[in-house]
Amino acid sequence: MLSTLDYLNLVVAVAVVATYVYVAYAAFGIRRTLAGGVYRRQALGVCLIALTFAADYLSNFLPYSGILGFLSTAAFYAMALVLLYWVDSSILASRRTDPLFRDTLRWNRIRPAVWVCEISSIIVPFALFIYYSFVSVATIPDFVNNLLNYIFAVPIYIAALAGVLVMPMAARRSRDSTLRKHLEWFFVFIATQLVLQGGVDQIFFSGSVSAYNLVDGIALIVGLYPLYRSAKGLVPLYKFDVEKAAEMGEVAETAQGIPSLSYRWKQRTK
Amino acid sequence: MHPMASTGITDLDKLLLGEGYPDRSAILVTGAPGIGKEALCYWFTRSGLLQGDFCLYVTRLATREVLKDARAFGLDFESRVPLWIAREGGEIPYDYSDLAKLSFSIKEVLRKNSGRRMRVVTDVFSPLLLMNPPENIFRFLSQLTADIKQYDAVLLATLEDGMHTTQVITAMQALFDGVLELRVYEEGLSYVPILKVRKMMGVPPLPGYFSFSFTKTGMELGAYAKHT
View 1: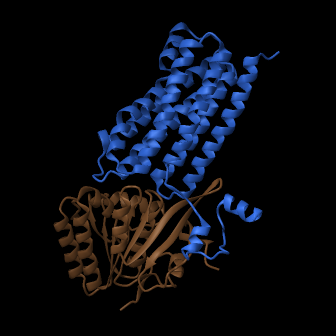
View 2: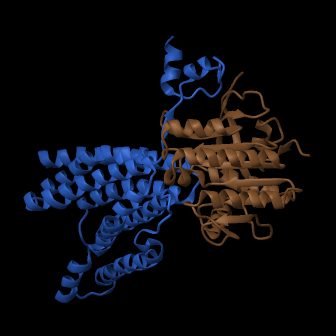
View 3: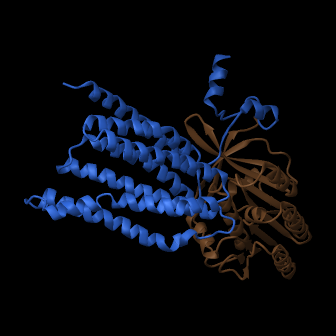
């Protein structure tokens, strides 16, 4: 029998999946309009972040062992990987719009090392998890368990550290107002997740799994708007007003490829 | 003397009455970072090199970065390369703080190759405008366009959207003979990159908006909303 909290969790989970898939779709749509490799990677990063944050939240409902535990761990590490992917591409994009083209904290030189650290810090716990879950019949020794506790979250710390140390300086050096706005909204998104998912739920709701998951879901819903604005802030977006364009003599009243849905709706209802 | 300089992109040539940018003209491409302004520069340079024109590429990047970017669009400058004024790896070093030297270097290159048809491509105006008073850049540009008109040359320059005030962008557009605008328009749930020819010397006003996409063979244009 499901409790009220379980029903609430179900509603929140459906809302999170639907809205985050839409944000991912928006970011991917913008990626398709871009030609520059760094900017396309940045847009893809936002798209994957929306998907992996939703996937990581859904993995809260999975057990922590066996194949489902494997999927749950994979979702967490995928989130860490795409976060670093976005940080990396955003720093490179910031450099492109720095008039002095400065290499902030020598990021271009250290980024291969950062990626090596990130990938190795994922491989080690993953290998231990797979070994003790699927290969070895022995239970996990205490020292391995302790080690896993310490190194489990390292990939996310690496991504966060790269973002916290290099990103603000790179953003300040960039003179692109669109990129800055994108980064500001993304910062608001990450801040809401850190406060709610990394603080409030752990401090007040760690006793109840359902309440804990509910707070995580609400955190993602709170973070939805900033993430959406961040995705739409990847490039300046313009609205095409065919009536205004026709007035200016730029298109005929019977213009082809009339773009906006609202315009089509207005025409239909005239 | 050639009347026009091919853009290197068949669809864009067709749009500009079948031949390309007018000779002895300065063309500006504006748009957000990453939208594909540089791709127009790469295709224009490659087209010039293939036709035997002398090409000068003035960039704020290192030459290897430009070559890497160009390769991503399917262009390889390995066999035929332009003359570079670049931050790194070029024949002449680029220094944003010494406008007089930059102006002199470009003028010298144009003078030395005055017997040939020339193409000058540059992405330095945005950083120059950010690092110098706009009036200085307007003077520098006026001098450059005067040189372009004196020789058999075409200048193609890019300007980043979102990095300058509207006044600066309008003033820059006024100083060029042709202006292409690349923008992303929101259409319901989708996003469409659109090219608009704001003005073009010697070409009647081109009403219409054209959606575009880049392929390994160039740029494909399609009528988005046009005069019918």
